[in-house]
Image 1 (cartoon, rainbow, N blue to C red):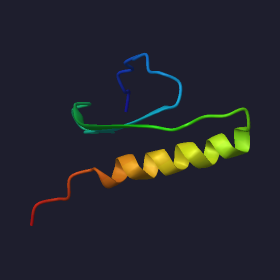
Image 2 (cartoon, rainbow, N blue to C red):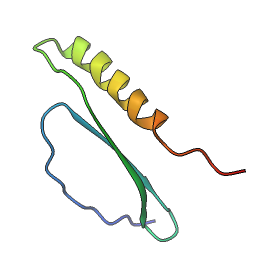
Image 3 (cartoon, one colour):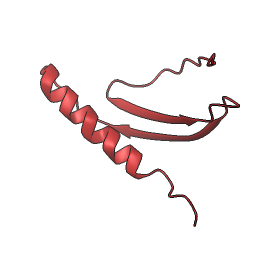
Image 4 (cartoon, rainbow, N blue to C red):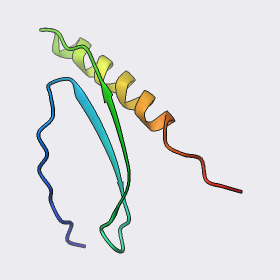
Length: 64
């Protein structure tokens, strides 16, 4: 499938997670978070992963 690319400027340390419907290309949900970055690339990877995990936890649970 061909996905529409949208460019959005974000601040350094921002984490954005988009959930997109693969059939319609419609944005279904967007979660945002922040990570503290340093001069240590390995530490930045850890911080970004922690921030992304927190964002994903905000994803609404499916209704039963």
